[in-house]
Amino acid sequence: MATFRDLLTAAKAQIIEVDTAAAADLIAGGAVVLDVREPDEYDQGALPDAIHIPRGHLEAQVEGKVLDKHAQVVVYCAGGVRSAFAAKTLAELGYTDVVSVAGGFGKWKDEGRAWRTPVTLTAEQRNRYQRHLLLPEVGTAGQAKLLASKVLMLGAGGLGSPSAMYLAAAGVGTIGIVDMDEVDASNLQRQILHNMDRVGDRKVDSAKKTLTLLNPDVDVVTYDTRLDASNIMQIIEGYDVIVDGADNFPSRYLLNDASVKLGIPVVHGSIFRFEGMVSVFHPLQGPTYRDMVPEPPPAELAPSCAEAGVLGVLPGIVGSIQALEVIKLLLGLGEGLVGRILSVDTTDMSFRTFNLRPDPANQVTYANRDRIIVQELEGLCAPGLAH
Image 1 (cartoon, rainbow, N blue to C red):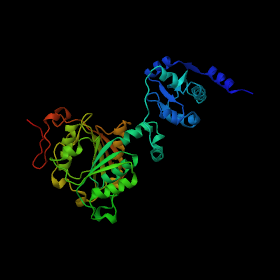
Image 2: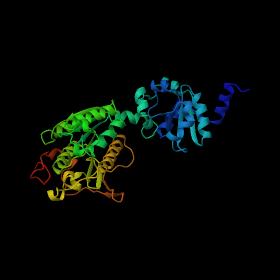
Image 3: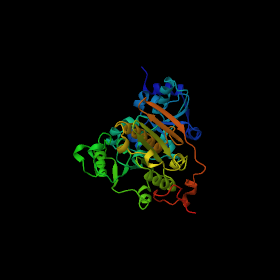
Image 4: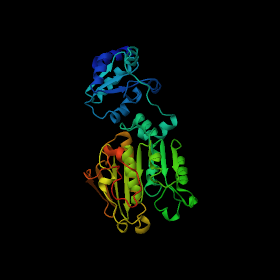
C-alpha cells in the first residue's frame, strides 16, 4: 500500500517544479498565479494578484477561474506539497503549462519577495455577494472595489430607481441621490424605489429607506435640492461615476459641463414613450453629451414623460443597462458604451448601436477644463467657456 511520501514522490515525478526565483521570472512574464492554501492562510498574506482556490475545491472551481488551459500557471501553497498535487491535478484536467513552486509561500516570504495582505470580506459579505465572487472577472478584489466606490444618481425617478436598486444590490459602497421632488402616486408605475405608503414623502428619503433595507452595506447620501450652477461642483466632486436620469435639457448640459471639468464619467440614459437610449460620456476617453447634442432642441420637440407618456417597464430596461455600464466602468470590464449609443425600441424589441464621435466644434472638453464656466442653460446655447 502506497504511503503519503510515495504519493508525493509520484506526483513530483509527473510535474515541473521550480524554485522561487524561476517562479518570479514566470510571474513577471505574465503567468497566472494560483494559490491553493486554505482561506485563513491566504488571508494572512499572498502573492500579488494571485487567484485563490483552496486545494479541496480545485477540481470544482479552477475551470471557472482559469479559463485558458494553455496559459502558463504558477501554483503555490505554504511549502510546496499541496501545490505539487494541485499541479498534477491541473495536468489531468488538461492544463498544459503548469509549474509548482518548491518551498511555497514560506520560502517566497523569507526571501523578501513581494507579497500583500489580500482584501477580505466579512462572512456576511461573502454570503451576500457569493454569485459575484464566483465570477473570475469580479472575485473578492472586484467586490471590494465596488464596496469602495462612490456613484451619484441624478434623479430618483424612473431611470434612477432601477439603477440605484441594482447598484445597491451589487454592493456599491456609497450611493448619492440628488432629487428635490416628492413621491407622487402617478409616478409609481415606473419609479419602483417608492410605494403608496410614501406618497408625499421626499423622494430622496424614500429612496434611502428602500436602498438601506436592500443592502445595509451601502451608505446612501441624499441631496434634497435642485442641482444648479451654485452647487453642482461641490455635490459631484469625489464621485467615481454619475448616473444621469435627468428629464430636462438644462440639467443635462449643466451636468455635462461640470463632469467634463472634473473628469468624471457620466452614464446617460433617456426614455420617450416606447424608446430609450444609453451612452457613456467619459471626458478622458471619448465624446460627451455636447458632442451628441450640441444645442438643445426646441421645447415642443422635447416633451417630458408627463406630456408624452412612457411605458412603465421601459425605464426599468434602460436604468438596468445604466447600472451595468456603471459596474463595468468601476471594474474595468468588457467594452462599454464610451463613444457608442445604444438605442432600444421596445415595440419591436430591437437594440441598435451607433458610433458617436467627438464634435470638432465642441470646446467643452477635458483639455479645456480650466476654461469651462459651469453656468445655467437658460439663454445659453453656446459652450460655457472663459474667453
